[in-house]
Length: 291
Length: 223
Image: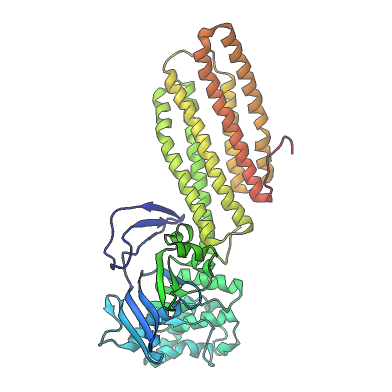
């Protein structure tokens, strides 16, 4: 990739920097330093769990069809932020979210929001693969069935499409009736991804998706993410900086303040974060001078 | 050797190689035109070589940036790491070789239509060897062929010997008649630029040997 200066600032939320540069890959594709298109926008969001402030005034833009990574030391609030993106933190007692999180321009914390629909459009994959104790087929068909799909031909197609999209089909097509739990760790994770894809999400959230996997399985998941971004928008939380560097287009570097609330220190195109970060704290973190 | 698990990174490495080869082509063209401008005394062509050098410089920095970002974001190791490091060095070598080609063209412009001090014999031979060495080094790079790279490096002796010959001959002109000094120096500097191009081609070969064998050292003589 090369970084070159281009012209003036796009219309971005006020919390984000106005400087525009363009990162161009050796294969000719390019990524703007500050996304001009917004699939989701986190706009000055503060999250409290009861009296405890977990996130303080965090802002960022999630660009469509890109991978956005959230990195930072333990306790910096990155998982809290991720869970806010599909209202998973509603399930935590006394959780309160101030500010707005917009999906295609609409606030998902608005009074008329259909939370179930938000969670369908913004799906989640967790750290430890958690396939249901059902067959591979039923794992993937679970979501569509819940949404009322009953015709076998339709379900068959949805299952196959999802398993193909998660690069698992070839390995399991002859054993769809087998338990999902009988698969290897990497395969289970891809099954969970297929399960998330089956309900046709627009955004996929991944919380440390490869931390429980071996190095080769990890690289396969990363390669899968690159394929998926053609059709989906991806946000991942990872404590593995090298993974964020390898796989993401944008990186948000977060840190815990003295009062233990999390803040966004720097948000930029990934090459910038790992070559010329603007904030000293970002540099200290990525160079390993801060734990 | 392609990487089935990391095809995206693999694609990036191929892009880097393609850009380096593009830089090599631009250099071959610049050198060819610089020599042609000398043998045909075409000042216009020489000026074109000088004007086009900026593009070569820009591509060198683009390649360096790509290497920089690949190192920062992809954590290449072993052969991949050596390839990226070699590309970084080779881009610089190619750009410096292009500067020498530009140097030759600048002299051609300066000479204008002043008659040459003597017919060109050794200088075109040096130029041909340089172009062979450059092509050989680029081929060795694409094929990752260590033996080819070593063969290129060995040919530098030919250029050095020819340069010594040119130097002695022009020196004797200058000693005999000071009025020939300007025209002798023009030819001497052209020969010097070619000699430096040959040295840089050895650097390219050394980088190829680094990629294939991991050896990071100066090529010496008949090793």
